[in-house]
Length: 288
Image (cartoon, rainbow, N blue to C red; front, top):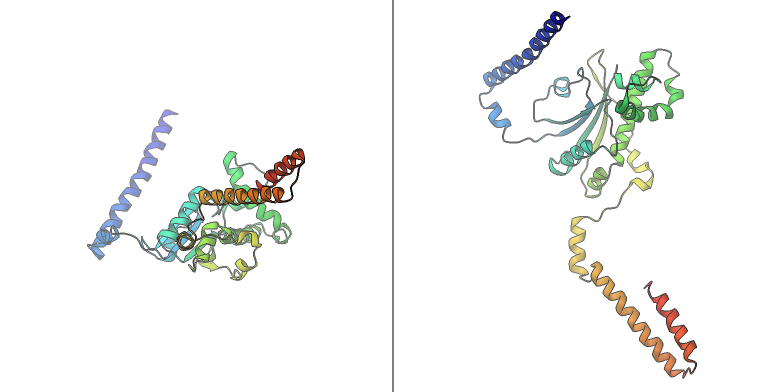
């Protein structure tokens, strides 16, 4: 038994070392092509795309698109999900849009996806994974009739993979970071891809570009942009909460004085009635 463990460990170490050796060959190849390649790369990145893909080892974005390091900003997770509360992903989107000034975001799913396949069954895959895959189950639930219309199991998985990409594109459209970018005039476009593992080709899914305009209006957030904030400071210096409170108090005080003067002019002799009226006016003036 111990001998088996040792043999297995040696095999795994060899696999590990093979990866490091591959890096050495990669560096040597790049340096032969361009001796200043890595020095140039170290000066910064200027990617044109943000790609949100699946963690599946069969779907490496750079290799599939023949792009070099620095060309695609990449985020990957199980089944290429865009969950609104995922802080990791939201930080990536914000950095890509607001700092790297990326105008194209791609959601890339793929066929033969283990996450999608697992989401179509009732078998638990354990703990956090079950919670994560619930996002795909929601897509399945919405389109169950269409998915189940396919007889072949692989066709069902492919169908759900496509629908899942569309759902994640919609989630990006609803994202406040993207909404704010659009309001500022930043033309961020969102695309949906399906990588077909069995052929190697990427299929661009036809997603209606008018969909953002047709979304429920509650997702179309209105932001007070920095330029508007600066303008309001110059145009309305009394717009701060402190000055607004002072203004409300002054209005209330002025109305109280006017009311008391009116009472004096009408020569109201009933003191209790006068007190009651003033007290009622004070209560109503608190809302000013």
